[in-house]
Length: 219
Image (cartoon, rainbow, N blue to C red; front, side, top):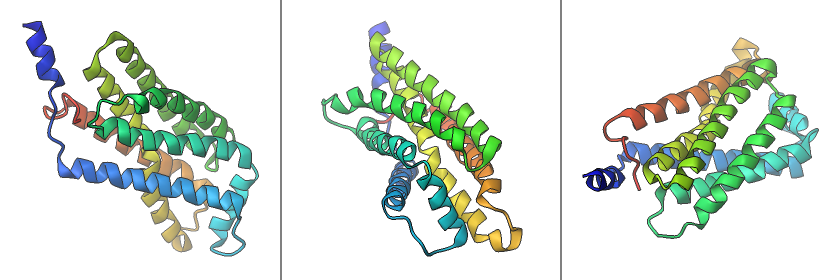
């Protein structure tokens, strides 16, 4: 009886199109943001909006740490796509998923020392990055225990948190677009954007995991 229940839990769940669309949009947005930041580190722009140029200068002042965070994070996001949507029996993406996730988390802590949005942004990083590390640790624990269902649930939480950086982008874009009227600087709205973006992703994935269709994860 226990075996039948386990097999039932491990059965694939159909992926709704909206979920796949949000997942791929987040992947593309996050990778585009990482690529844009790396290009700005290599070739700082002298033109463009003052706020954007100021941000480029800010990150260029911490170029080594920024690159050390962005490169593993980008690789982690690519691995996440393989791990969450793979159909083959290959397990090499999963083997790399955990170490690159850990590097991403610890360098995020280091980056928060130079947070653009000050303590508000730093608090968002501390809360959600710690939740990410916890989720990663729980996924690894269930991997060692051979519990594939709970492993994928915790991996999904970890991936959703990292992709929260993609959700912050349209929020930041809205702040940038309205800055002429609001007169808000990036240092004033980065923290708000971080809290909104990561909170939305965390809430959305919990809703999915706790719903009947999300009780097991799509493969």
